[in-house]
Length: 321
Image (cartoon, rainbow, N blue to C red; front, side, top):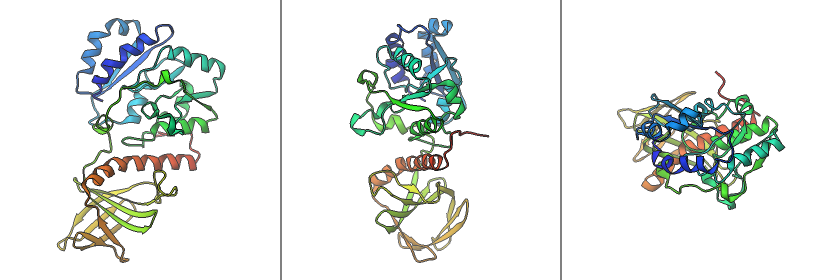
């Protein structure tokens, strides 16, 4: 969504870099962009569209970007036996399509991804580069659409392809990892799950376990008990297995009345902090920079928990109706 400024640089370059492989189509999906993407594509790629070298799809209904759903919609337009996600800010590198074809000719019971397990390679901007058989992609249900916002939808897809019995191979050649460097605003500005936080309260229970309550500007709220099993080395898990979401209001004494999916609770006002019925204090976070960071972490932690749940339940297929 609204990534024409990247597509202008990468699309033609990627098509030119793979002219040596004839049996190739590029699929570009416009997820309700407001930056003129459709007009630009039809003005500059009419020949490729007519020949079927470029397949262009679009939707005008979403009001925010959904990483999993948008990718699934694009993949449904693909007609080849092998599908590969290439993000808008990614350059494929020379003869990438031929490299993919050679790999699957050698081992069709596999998939290709970036080595997200090795941070030393610093290929994080290409984590979305995943190639697999289209049949396998359809079997696992594609990207998990219960994930919102940024993070883990690509790693989760790899995890479920492995559960399907496909062997993971890493794309290690640096010529396939060139990207357009950019800030976090491009990643998060149109993301689903991006909510404006009004306040956050934390109840500290141990050095690596805390209850955390988010209050959003539209009177929605979310609660979860976070436990960092890696003691600061990774994203925490949510003991309740997901963010518990609901709504909140204040009574005449400025107490908080929280209504969540599974239960309700009342927090008594103690100046800027609150206390629950068991006497646990919820301290208000006042650092503005940390609140901005939490706005980013909220969907990431939720998606990480979905990934953990899928692994524990050995779930291969997602997005069942």
